[in-house]
Length: 327
Image 1 (tube, rainbow, N blue to C red):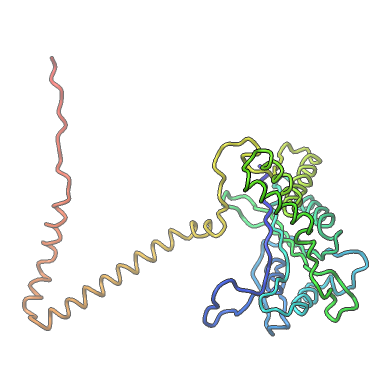
Image 2: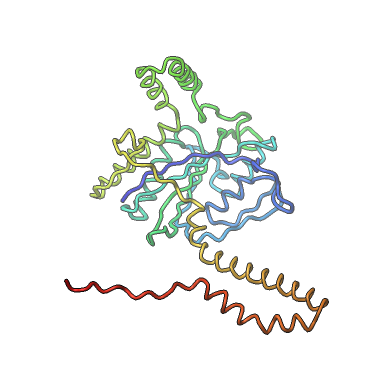
C-alpha cells in the first residue's frame, strides 16, 4: 500500500542544543551529504573526513540548472563551496526534502519519478539538488524506499569566489506576496472565526511553497502508479479533509529502533541491577563480619530456611473445586 510522506527541514550550522564535551561544535552540510549519499567526503572548513556505513543507498545523483559549471556535479566541491558561502555561525546551509517512495514501483521507476519531480519543482527554479535514494528494511520486513533531496539556498553565480550569489533566494522560502496574504487571512479569521474566513485562510495556505510541493508530489506519484497499472494512490490532504475519521498515526522514527533494542536493554539493565544489589549485600555482610563473625556465620547458614519460609507466604493455597450434588 502506497504511503504519503513528504517532510521539509533546513540543515543549519547551529546544533540547536549545548555542545557535548568532546563532541561536534556545529553541524556540517558536508557531513549531511556524506550520510545521504553514502560517500566519504572531506569537510575543508573543519579539516575532517566524514564517512557513514550506508549499504541501503541504491542511487545518488546531482541535478543542476542548464549551463551550470562542472564543479556543481562533484559532491565534495559542491557542499564545501556551500560552506564557504556562509559566514554566520548559525547559518542555514541547505534545505532537505524527505520523501517516501511507493513500493509498487521498481527501483528504476522510483528513480525516474524522483528525478522528474525534483527537476520540475526545484531545479527549474535555479536550485541545485543532491538526490540520495535509500531502501532500508522496514518494520514489516519489507523495504522502505525513500529519497533525501538536499537543495541549495543560493543561486549559482560564476562571478562569485564561492560560485554562489551573495544573498539567499528568499522566494525559495516563501514569495512575499504569499506570505502577506496568509498573514492577513490568518488575522482576519482569528478576529472573526467565521467559516468563510476559515475557507479564505485555507485557500491562502494552499499557495505556500510547502503545500504546493506536497500536492505536486502526490500528483507525480499517482501518475506514476497509474502508468504501471497500480490501483494504489496517495493523498497529501489531512485525514479530516479526506473524510477519514481516525487518529493520525505517528511516525515512529527512532522509536522503532528503540523498540527493537528494548529486549536487549531490558536484559542488560536487569543484570546490572542484580550486580548492584549483590554488591550492596556483600558490603553489608562485610560490616556485620567486623562486628561479630560468629553471628554472621549463623545468619548465612539460616538464609535458605528464611528464603523458603518467605516464599511460602506468597504461595496460593490449593483449593479443591466443589462438585455439584445431584438433585
